[in-house]
Image (cartoon, rainbow, N blue to C red; front, side, top):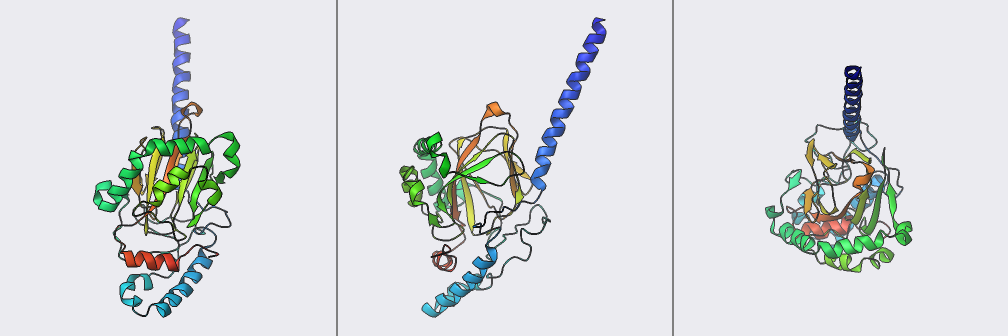
Length: 304
């Protein structure tokens, strides 16, 4: 009799383990589904046509203002065409192929992940963030209080919940928000490579709850490097870029190029809590200062 009971228990345990791994595999597989949001203000998903047309118009204005600009911005000139495979397509390219959906600057070094030591400015900026992680965490804990929840936005996800709190949103400073985290805003504003004057630049706190899936998607451009400073992290939350998996570390920066297909899965249970990071968009190190200034003008925030 005891043998039968033991056998029954073993069978149930096997079923439980198999079910767990099937569920985990299904969650990870959802990262391979293409993602497109419905935010009416999103440059990547909705306003890409308007942004591209406006950029071409402003480029011609810039050429009239500065007659000698063409020589210094040749690759901008040949890059001002929208990528033909946009987020309305249900297909992804090969895993290791970047596909920026709005502006693809030619002749940039395509690398999925970046080491901080790969560029002096990236190294300096990430060092500033990491050395001030406690200050940034303090600001995060303040804005995450119940009385400030109305300032947070929810992004589209097939499962779970992904909340964001913008300091800079597509090149626009969120004046009311930065009052609640002025120390963090002051820090990031002084970074050498922070992208803050065009529609591709964002500084945002990002919170992903357990069970959340952010499906695979491409970013709008290849001119930026996304810097994630880990504030609250766990092993169960995974970033996937071109099929390569990375995990955040508390107090450390993770740098990647979001022009490549990427997604996130928080596979932890509720007791693991949310993953929280500060996202800072930095300029790609191969872009010259004159190109930065030109791109800032051409892709200045909408309604400016």
